Image 1 (tube, rainbow, N blue to C red):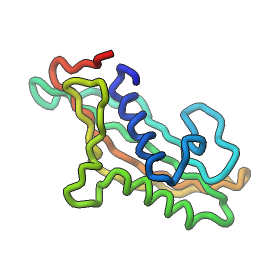
Image 2: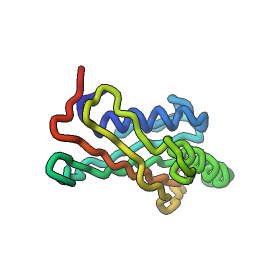
Image 3: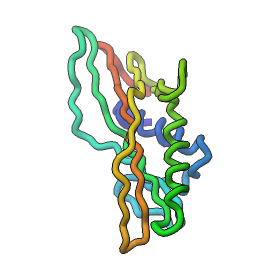
Amino acid sequence: MAADPVESVRGEVLRRIVETGAFSIDQIQRENAPAPNALPYARLTIAQGAEWVPSSQNHMTKTIIAEVDVFTSEMSQTQLAGSLASSVEESFGIYARKSNKREIPMPGWSGATATVTEIGRGSATTESDKGLYRLPVLVYVKITLEDGAHYEF
């Protein structure tokens, strides 16, 4: 586990996706890595660049977007893409009342929390030259660091 809170969140998001049973670890494409050979698969991307913002005198927050792109066959599996995307969404419990699934564990961190605040879907696209249908699931995660937050190796 990395000492960067964003990397800690990335690991936990990946774990949640695999725990849904919708995708195995071999069906997850990492950033800047080749795509798995078989369909369906998912690609997890967390864009860097969000700034830490003081939310009080002793807290800093950052909201990141974990984009989970669900890939299926363009011609025959668009309904499957929707079902897989729904499984990813459900794993974060944003639509469930009193759900603790919104909390993202931060193993090794003291004084750090992460919470899913919103889930959305991006515009579906096709990559006709590759025969792919892509349905993005956007998971918004708010990370909060208290003064003195640190990672314990």
